Amino acid sequence: MAARRQLAQSTLDRFRRLLQEKEQSLVAVIAAHEAERSQVRMAETAAERSPDPESADGSAMAYEFEKERSVDRNSRDILGEVRSALKELENGTYGDCRVCRKPIPVARLRARPHTSQCIECAGSRR
View 1 (tube, rainbow, N blue to C red):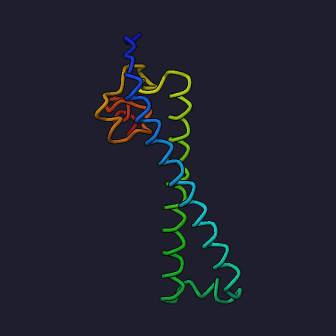
View 2 (cartoon, helix red, strand yellow; view 1 turned 90 degrees about the vertical axis):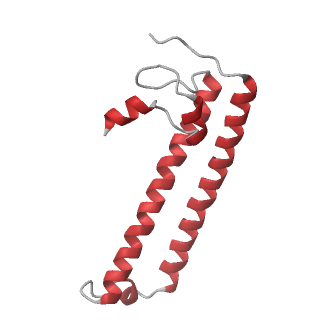
C-alpha cells in the first residue's frame, strides 16, 4: 500500500472552498439549462419542435439539442465528481488516487481539484 501523505489544513481548506464554489456554479448552470429547456418547450408548438429532420432548420435544431444535452451531461458528471471530492475531504481520503491509493500530486489537484485519480491511473483508463 502506498504511503499516505497528509495535506496541510490550509491546503485542504483552499481545496474545499474551490470545490464548494465549483459545486454552486455547476448547480446554477444545470438549473439555468433546465429553466431554458422548460421555457422553450412551453413556447414552441408541437410542429415547431419537430420540424422535418431533412430540412436545414430541423438539422440545426437537432444539432443544438444534442449540443445542449452534451453540456448538461458533462455538467452533471463534473458535479458528481465535485461532490465525491467534497466527501473525500470529509472522510480524510482527499488527494489519494482511488485506483492505486498513491498521493495525487498537488499540481494536479490545483488544475483539477475534483480529480479522483493520479495521471498514470487516469491515463490507463483510456
